[in-house]
Amino acid sequence: MLLWRRAKEPAAGLWSLPGGGLGTTEDVQTSIRRQLAEKVDVQQLAHVEQLAVFSAPDRKPGPRVVATAFLGLVPAGNDPEVPSDTDWHRVDALPPTAFDHESIVLRARDRLRAKLSYTNLGFALAPPVFTISELREIYSAALGYRVSATNLQRVLARRGLLEPTGETAAPGPSGGRPAAQFGFAAHGMQITDPFAVLRPPQHRSG
Amino acid sequence: MLLWRRAKEPAAGLWSLPGGGLGTTEDVQTSIRRQLAEKVDVQQLAHVEQLAVFSAPDRKPGPRVVATAFLGLVPAGNDPEVPSDTDWHRVDALPPTAFDHESIVLRARDRLRAKLSYTNLGFALAPPVFTISELREIYSAALGYRVSATNLQRVLARRGLLEPTGETAAPGPSGGRPAAQFGFAAHGMQITDPFAVLRPPQHRSG
DNA sequence: CCGGGTTTTCGACTTTCAGTTGAAAACCTC
DNA sequence: GAGGTTTTCAACTGAAAGTCGAAAACCCGG
Image (cartoon, rainbow over all chains, first blue to last red; front, side, top):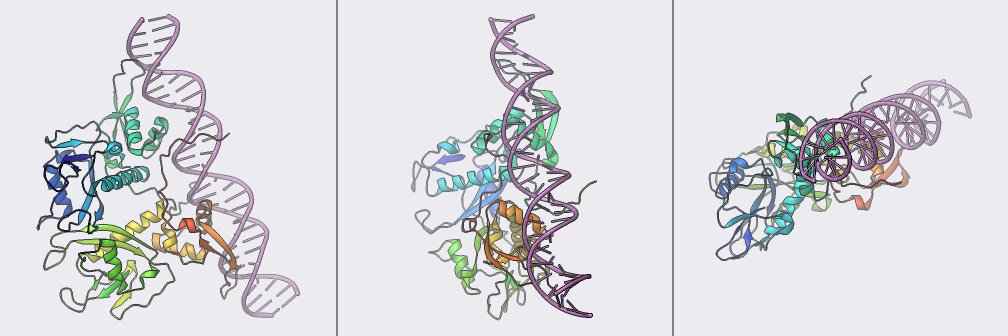
């Protein structure tokens, strides 16, 4: 999570999600991209989607503020420079946060985990080129449990999302077979339909 | 879709989604239930969830309005009484609608279809007691394609969602075997986790 | 009340795809 | 070159969806 430390009241010293007021001539998506641009290079955002509206009247002190929260994803390995009051934090080790921001973060985490399961959103977390082991680490970190590299490769390959680059990565210091490198196929860079449980009838071939 | 006909400008004569301004002491969920209560018996709502924020600056004439849209579901067969300016409409045959309300409806339809596939949201569309044929009709209407009654029954039964009542429905005028009646199991009345594609490792039994 | 038509139910087969395993491949260091 | 390490891949297993067809249980008309 990208968080910044509040210098002034309210909630001075606590960590806060980037954001701000909605301009009169922009929609919420434009607005959050504008706000984010002050903290990080927006070009690195691989995915942005609405998360939810948080509107409890007492969610923060002072005048009533209704927040539209977004989920934005940056590929792993990207370590963008951020201002001095801003820093990256592990979702499983959050610092003390302001207002209801922790619940927003947890909601975002759950959304990501769910979407990783039933869409191909994984491309937004992966760098342009990766090995299956690296991708396994990314998926495992995001989901919170270790996934099988063999199975991950086959599931993604079957959907035509993996494209081998032909190159191999250098082995680690302890040796091992060099890993083949992959990228996500271009047509995999947008979210596919969720995996339907009840599909349209598909007439048997043969 | 529950729509009401606008009597006055703007967009007089066009059909509009129920809704209204957010009170200073309520959150958006409370607000939409309050607004809906003016049109329909809110007790019949089997499911309510946030859909999305619609915030284009020019989405409607006059002062700028940011809308938080909700998806609410009423079980089939329910035909609640509504005020004289209000009526139900088929989503695949919408009348002329005001502002961006048609795109909101279509977004809601897509959300419902997706969630029907990867959750057990179907319970919110079904009446308390139903036959498999009736449930098939409901699913088919919502999804836009005909599903197999045999398969639907087995998929839901395998998840423990179907509970036979022991009763049978009266056959139609042309005869046929009387259909067994079912209800949704109590623990199926909340949305289950989506069906994970990459699951945690599950050690083999045996 | 019996036979034909209709609808539902259910078991069995097929297909698809995810989970698992183990062996071979390809590298490292000593 | 031997031994250790990591990746890759083919094959097996298992679970669940898609399909099919027969049997069950009703209607109606003669």
